[in-house]
Length: 316
Image (cartoon, helix red, strand yellow):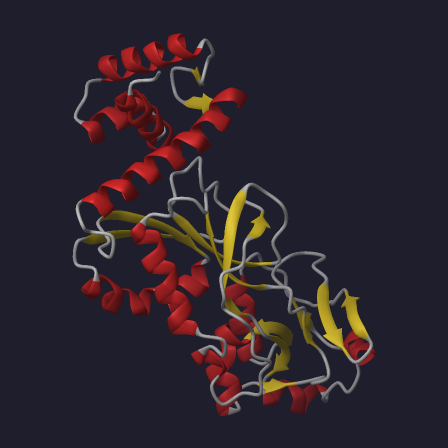
């Protein structure tokens, strides 16, 4: 049977990205870390890591072993918290991944209250529009706004997402207001991914159109600013432009059509068993904060969604 300390060292090497970094975190020399890993591999009779002078990479066996070790370590943390009567207290560091704009607008402003209520917890919030490898990069939870596909991870829907076609009044005054989806062919429609299709739902059910626009960018935030500046029409989430829609700075058009409701805000985490207290409390906090009708939809017509836990298979 594996020495439990070897499992922790192995998991720390993977999350830290190198033996030297893991050694610094654990207070061990790289030589000791390397020796313990070799001992673990000898005991298992298989190679877990491919080592080069610059980096390490998990083998196929190592990837499966790592996912199970993470679950074991999380379970031990939960068991120790229970024995120490700390089951309602979050401690340690919570590593969170979130989309850049959503994290800046709807997570960062609310961290103060959460951290004040959990004073023994530190948070490492990493904002990126790329889908991170939650297990391989050592994240406790990732916030994703997407329609999720299959994988071994677990998801909980924490807020519905409503996306609407909108433009500024000055654009509509200059170019006219589209009345039908076919009218959009004569307008400057802005997207942040080349060739991106707009998947909509309307009276006839799901429809998909490929918008054409004069502005090309890889930034959703640039599209947002361009729509506000009167450059064109965008398909924007109400979490992103809700205040501007409420104030009249932006106007919803083609109101019979909105973005696919299969897209939502989800919290993604590695395993549903032995969920660490810090992860559960953070997800519960966000779900309660956003609710079935999120605050960013206040004053707007909306279709309420559910925020109950959903055991989904999801993509990394």
